[in-house]
Image (cartoon, rainbow, N blue to C red):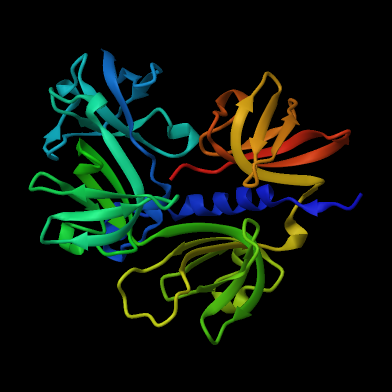
Length: 366
């Protein structure tokens, strides 16, 4: 049986490279680099159940108990961004906790936001999609979901704008947007927080062409039938083994790469090609091989198995052993795997439709 290159290994390799790209907050602010937003941890929302020496425990909305450590670098603040301290934590209060993205920092609080006393999580609603229209006169905009449905979002003087926008006037059609709503109005929402910016994409595939003089290359993504043209600019970062790729002309046809792109909205560019923020590539010769790779969403886990549903709706069940490797900043073992997570599995074919997982790579949450 012929062997196939396993793309999970590519992802594991390039994600390791990305780990070194976290820049300081000041550098991020100056360059407006979207990478920190891409790899930032999402906050964990919960109600404080106990406070100890250098730690506190919360209960999340799904009933999970999580204990967070704090140190002298942990910051505390209110929703209005007033600086607070550890002593302001109270049992029963609601907090949003941001931690590091790496495994050794998952339980170390970097930022703790103390929410108002009247905070009611049951009143929260939200939406994610792209901006399809902005109506400044009516103080509203329309958000379009991936499935095509649309919702009108109303803003007021209490709405907080984040990301690349500071007000409704900065919002442009085509921007990626996330909304936390404080109430619903019929079929619409009244926004508490709006975070928006240029759409960010992550693409994994084979480099099929390089035009160094033209400032672009072609990538054949594993999840798409058609190749895509990607532009590069002076801010594009290149990462590779032994730093062999420093600029576009070093990229070669046949390499496998993970490309993080942004698609600027409202600029004067004449082409529609996304711009590469990061290109992390590896030679085919550096890749291990397995019989099969499958990417999709985790639909179930067992004592020694996991089931993945791919984009076509087909399910694959993989047996796991003590030798199965889990590569992720969030998942270290089968016990950490949760339904709904996106994963890529490299497997050995055992016959009779059975597969043994060699490596399980969980795609980081954005």
